[in-house]
Image (tube, rainbow, N blue to C red; front, side, top):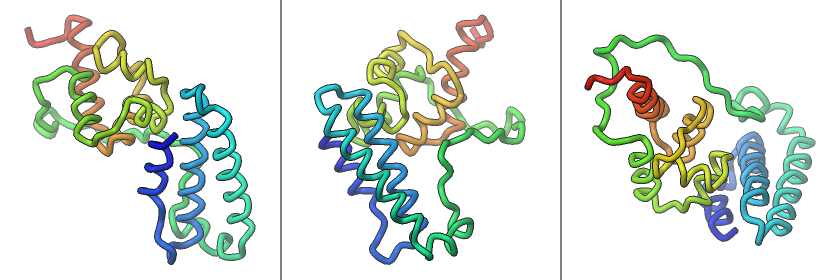
Length: 178
């Protein structure tokens, strides 16, 4: 719970931020606290309290007249994050990939940011044990949505994460360079 509160405080918009920024902030907090409630059974009820509080804040903010004028202009965050297909890249346009397995790279990125498994799992909306299994290589990410969510949770490049994860998949299918 402490990590969730710290994350919330770190993302808090400034006092003069538009209502749409506060709505996006409160919605993100609600999703985060809901994920914490699902992941951390020791703080389940406390996280549900914070989830409900943030949800009520969103309701209150969206009733303000400023919300109506901000909506659409400020790029209000949608309810869900969708992966938008990108244009196809030629092999020469691909970024150089580190010579490391996806899970190892994922763990190093998490540790560089000094984030716990719980915090990253909550941000990415996956289970802590799933994240741990991906990091140690006993489980694949499963989908591009999970890969994108992990990249976003760590502030990493989605394309780099996807290429690393897909390289492991291609290698296991016999499509490697070996």
